[in-house]
Amino acid sequence: MHDLKFAVVGAGHGGKAIAAHLAIKGFTVNLYNRTFSRIQPIKKMRGIELEGEVKGFGKLNVVTSDIEKAIRGVDVIMVVVPANGHISIAQRCAPFLNEKQVVVLNPGRTCGALEFLNILRKEGNKKDVTIAEAQTFIYASRGMGPAAARIFRIKQAIPVAAIPSRKTEMVVKKLNVAFPEFIPAASVIETSFNNMGAVFHPSITILNLSRIESTLGNFQFYIEGVTQSVAKILEAVDKERVMVARKLKCANVYSAIEWLSMAYNVVEDNLFDAIHSNP
Image 1 (spheres, rainbow, N blue to C red):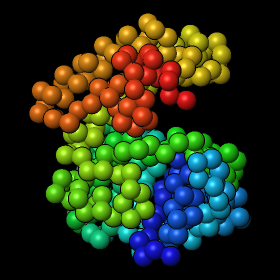
Image 2: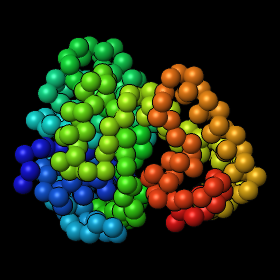
Image 3: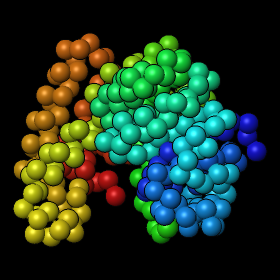
Image 4: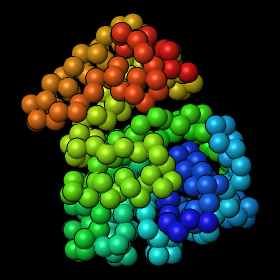
């Protein structure tokens, strides 16, 4: 058993996967979800069955809908919820976080760490809590049942940055005890502007609105949703993102094609082929 203790906040596809993986690796893991009915089967089983790239049963220490109980005494809090849930989680955590704890948003999306810290301050938490964000989520994963998850792929390199940036090295060192895939980024500006979800998700959704309505979303979002024409529009959006980041003196900004190569080892010279080459 490792000394480092984790809380995973959020029991969706990613939260279940990361909680189970950490437990299988031998870490003490608490799992929190605001809706208890979602985690009741996990509490009954006392853990999560993991399949795919990592196989095994992850026995959890605490499974609860009480945020204070979930984060009490842990070293690292892995927040694994959609970006629109960050404010609520920050509000719930604010009374209980202390200066010894590290909060990592998985992922931060765009300026997630800045938003989270701002909410803590508004809620009256003035302690020197370390807030960090991952540029992307470490897995391609999916829940496979009430108390099961599958990891399809573990990404190779996940940049992480903390506020302030001088704390990034400490955060990465802690995370590397469990996950060697995390690497330091220069700042949260870098992780935020390298959020590929901001390029892919809105554009593909808008350009597939009729298909979403007619199929009720029953299609492969990337493989079927990204045609040659859609890919060209994505490339134009991506080009503008890179240009803005460079104006902000962000040296380590990646194009979408470069990011797919780094995260998934996909090497192509255009975005259409890069997306369609990623299983």
